[in-house]
Length: 266
Image 1 (cartoon, rainbow, N blue to C red):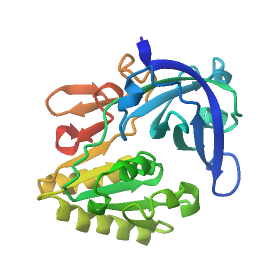
Image 2 (tube, rainbow, N blue to C red):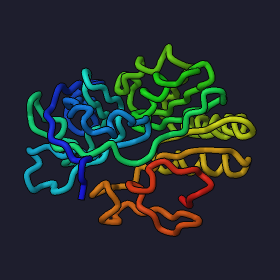
Image 3 (cartoon, rainbow, N blue to C red):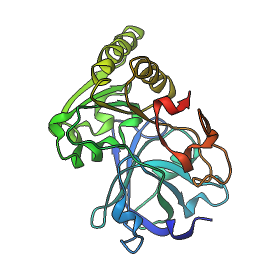
Image 4 (tube, rainbow, N blue to C red):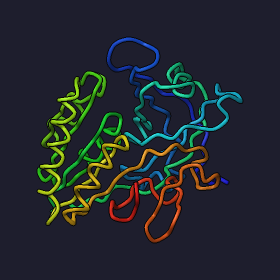
């Protein structure tokens, strides 16, 4: 089913961000790069994802877990960034260097890059993961503006990786008024990029719904990376379907995860 996309590798390192351990902590897991024999890794782009399944999963959980690729380099390894939220991520957070992992990817499509175009990068929570490399790779980072909304402290997100590369601003949500202010900022900023700009976004569904609503109202070109739950990662199980306006139900893993906002219903 997975063909050349399925590779065996091992854990290279695991870095914890923020304070405490257990549910809620943030992890960057780096795997040994399986090598460039798989041509797809030579061509991977930010926005694509991988399915990860360590041998320690046993039969529970049965399926792998999907993660945006934070970075991928033959020497430095392949990194993913996640928050510990359940059984699968708890087991991932307990991995040690050298432990075996099955990896399939890179999968899916990527965010558009238009070097001469003003680009608004909108990240919500763990949705910042694909954008570290996006801003790093961009040929004209001066054309980028990143707005990041988060609830846990900023120290949980390795924010320094994005700072200094492009215009970045973080907004900490600690109460309902903070949320309303952040929504107002999105509603004010998105239209500024709807005439001759590009908008790309990744984050929780309500966050994406707000961006889609404003972008569609103003005729903007916005790309949304959907975080639907996935099981197989290759479109076989139909477990991550979304509604496409012209194609009907489509698998987010196989057709996305990045979609133009005016293509889909949320």
